[in-house]
Length: 338
Image (cartoon, rainbow, N blue to C red; front, side):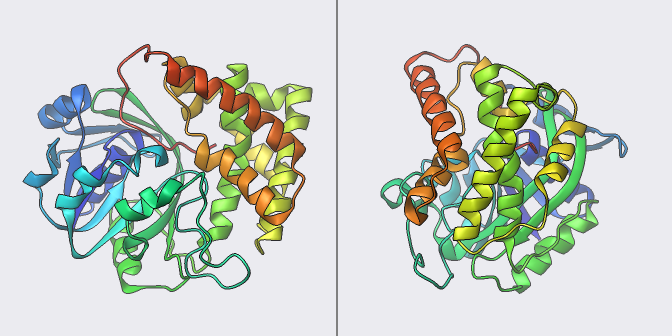
């Protein structure tokens, strides 16, 4: 099995190292200091489950790799529309694209019945740009339940979680999903094939939609947000509104808000990827995480006042970040658990 990891940052390099350890032929696509470190020393993973080093091929030119069986996207969702030049050389007739993103994916209303079948979200897929870059028939959804950080170029700190739930947009349990799941398990990761990945999307989103923007606006860690009475109440309100939007779309996640809060609090003083972005002067991954759910609230008639208020403040901050030059070179993107 040939697998390319496009965006070998914290999550991408971790997955690539595990797949390589499990026997897959892995190619990492990275840039800058991260690429140089991967070329010289491979991927060094530091984990409570055991440290290990893997040495897959690394490059900044996908043309060196050519068509593969799977592309694992380690990019943040806001970079999907512009990834065509990097993605095109990796695509063969049957290449699948594993989209490991936070938030609402561009394929969300593909393969579903009901009043919103085929609806294209302007916040997620503006003008159909993402659909053109990654045709939905190639897409396999992926929800990441792992927290990783780049400790240094080429060094990935894995804090917790090894689950990467995957699924077809149409809900089928396909041979290509089963084969990728087996490769992930061979590398020591959990990779269940879910007939209804949309429930996983909303479970993960309950954390991302609250802690990610609030951490950026308050410059606080997840545990600090949980320990503060006022922000804990705000998180609870935002989660309730998120579940209301999900229910209007026919999804009712089987997890309580208290359990979701407890899980977030257990991560301790974890700094979300959104907070890291703001500290480096980079725009936040906001459209697919928060603005998309506000769009869905409009679509379904949900009030969602807290989500709308936080989204307004976060969008204003994002505008200011996009106007200013970045404070530091951007490391490879990641999608840590929130």
